[in-house]
Length: 128
Image (cartoon, rainbow, N blue to C red; front, side):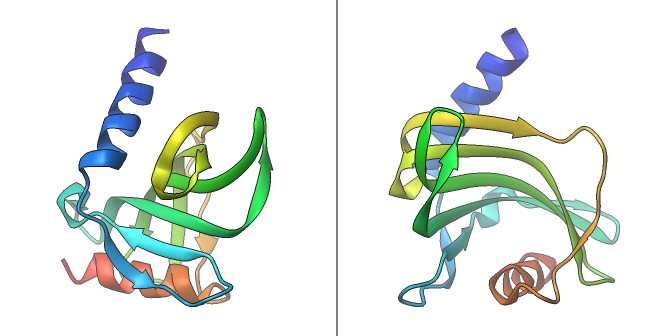
């Protein structure tokens, strides 16, 4: 329980104090941002917090989410990523009520090549 509360506090305070760098702001699409201060370098991989303002709400455990804060692991040598933790919020900008928290203990790599905004984000994060 303490770990959950710590992560919740970290995420909520992180959203308001992060310096989000825009990756794309295409009208009608999900808008991706990353926080350069959150980037951790681990050999050929990087971990970073992303903010995703959703073009359309998605259903979360406790309502309709308008934004996500996601802690990603990116492979800088291949076009792949892994979700570590995702927080869903009822307001844009990672603000408002936390509707759901999902953590993935296993490292499940997924391909970014079919997701243009996520691939652009991977490239930006890996340049750091």
